[in-house]
Image 1 (cartoon, helix red, strand yellow):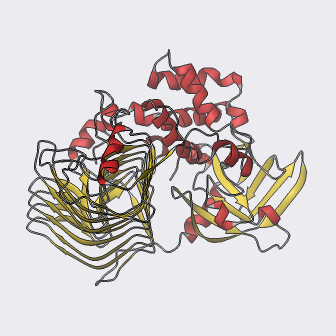
Image 2: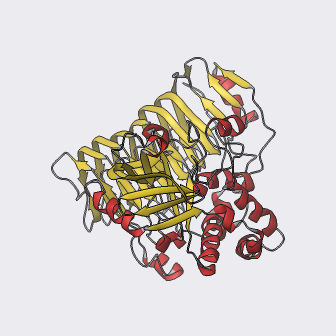
Length: 562
């Protein structure tokens, strides 16, 4: 995960804000208790809804909430849903049940209880007895989730029947989410049967084709049944391309059946991964504490890329020829404490101790806060040049300022929570050093900090284990045994180094749980970004270029389809 991680958290919000024209903000909560009221959400797609009663859809000709329409003609705009048709609000089911959903649209795209959601939050309900027949990007719960969160959904007796069409080579079918882009699927359970005809792809019991979409705490039970010449079949998800993580996922009592000439089939994910080189902005996917229990996989002739946890990394000759490096090699993924309990386990790494120890060696040196340096007016032209290459000369000044502001905040913790809330309507990250230090030195296991040359802290640290920030970013946690360490007791380091990303990203504090949250708690909206005190002009220009290029990449470069 070698990238400018703190902006990545902002990027989902910023790109959504730039790409989707948001409707007027509303704080009104709308209660839903009838079939008619549920269907009427399509009349106000930006509303905030709560379910106040169980709803039975038996006999209803259901029109999905929110429809997919591309925001433009380019490849990037095809991925971004048009704001006027997608659901952009919130839906809290409050633990209620919606039952007996039937959708019969053999040529339909983005079909499900929710068809297409963008910059939305949907969850906290049970969907029982759901059957969806569709052609592309479809699921029982959400057909297409763009920059959205789907959480706390329990799918019982779900069915998705895929129908062939000209784009079925991409497919994307799941119980909870069919297609996902830049989203989070968390704490969902799915008991479903997914069926694909010949020549279709990307199917899983929780998610189908998930790109840049993290899956956390999800459980899958059921079947994936595919015809001939299919690919991307997984117990939890068919595709996890460019996802940062699959964490605490369980595929239990799952049967995957595929015909002849099928490939990339895994107990958790059919295929997944990214690239180590930071310039591509596609992180190596980390599978942590994932279990495939009683997962049965049977294939026809010429099967390829079958694994207990992950089938394979993404690779195709077409992508290699069209894009060159890094797509001339399979995407990479890591397995941490992952187990297959039905007769074998894919080789799993230990707990990252060797990598964590090496990281402290790789970052040796003294650092100051990054953003006050690179946002100095002396570097304005560097920002403009990189932004103009993506958005054009006219838009470059505004976009450059947005990027600068995103990580130039000066408040964190409760003050930031009071100012930004959950960040969905905009926020700034504080990337400075806090708790009275202006320089931090890493010297192997020793970490120290000073203020105007005077020592503030100095301790020896030992590796504790892996840690995840905001359900999105994976790093390493270190702890000192010194009882007087206070707010320097723990250091949470991202795997960035001056050699890979020209900077460091880290957090420190006294509360481990709080260090894992980015929009709540005492460290909300803070992630320190450090820059070597001995950095030269070239490194300064390089880090600005990386910052701009990575975070505008989604609008600049076509990526391989999930």
